[in-house]
Image 1 (cartoon, helix red, strand yellow):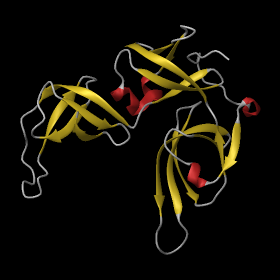
Image 2 (cartoon, one colour; image 1 turned 90 degrees about the vertical axis):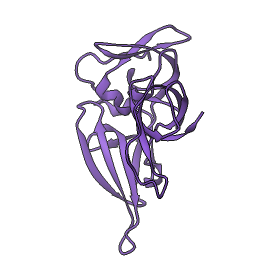
Image 3 (cartoon, rainbow, N blue to C red; image 1 turned 45 degrees about the horizontal axis):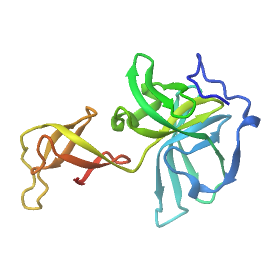
Image 4 (cartoon, one colour; image 1 turned 60 degrees about the horizontal axis):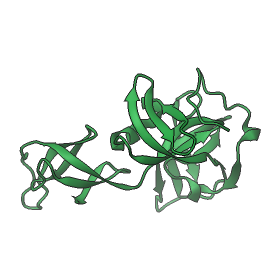
Length: 207
């Protein structure tokens, strides 16, 4: 089925056409698609909690891919979850325009667009020409799969700010080539390349 940007509201009401499997809460991770309350949702955030007393549970934030509505839900550890398997295709990020972020399939040369809101924080880690895995359901591109660690150039470095010098926790703000702001150690300068954890948005090391 070809990929494409949804025309109007995304209709995924016929879930019989979607590949899915029952799993337990260990399958809940960011960017996993699950069936929830009559719709298909993508997990945007999760936290495993073991309170010590009582049963462990998983707190989640779920975004409905049809409506864009975000809800919070708590699953008991071991509870069954219906995981939906998206289609995956290697594509190249081309550019951003009024419709969103545009990608091209390197084999078919077909292009798809993912809106800024749908893409979420992942937009902060896209550079032109970058290859990513585009995730889609029913021919609708919904997200991208990017490496946990990526390297970017620092295009602007601000002066250092006061911090906890005793612990060495002094940071300053820099701007990466994608436009995102990042807190880094004092020794990072304009023109340096730094490794970023794309899941947490935190500095890892100088490249």
